[in-house]
Length: 130
Image 1 (cartoon, rainbow, N blue to C red):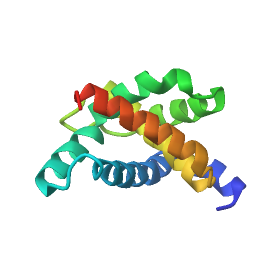
Image 2 (cartoon, rainbow, N blue to C red):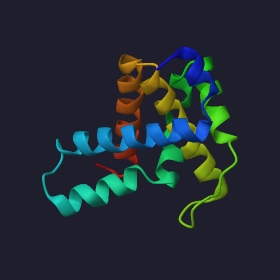
Image 3 (cartoon, helix red, strand yellow):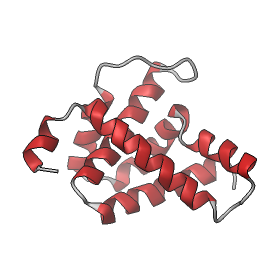
């Protein structure tokens, strides 16, 4: 995707892509833990939830560059409606986290994307005591 086009995309579009990428990343990594489909679903749903992603972001925030934090803030500040299972702050933080992942994906910065997703995954496992 062209650099100029990426700059013009809504943060919610970036979050849409980042959400899909993070879902697939988490589901793939969970195969190292279990092959039970019920457990896979439970764990992945917990990890990719807005409350979990908000905690993940705050846990890895110091690992991010200033530019990556700017992308997060742009996503966090996007106008959207929070779902019932998350607070407004959690939902906005998770949207910012997903926007960051989406932008890295569209820029094809897969090395950095995988570094961030791995740190996020490890953070989530710690939170779940796994």
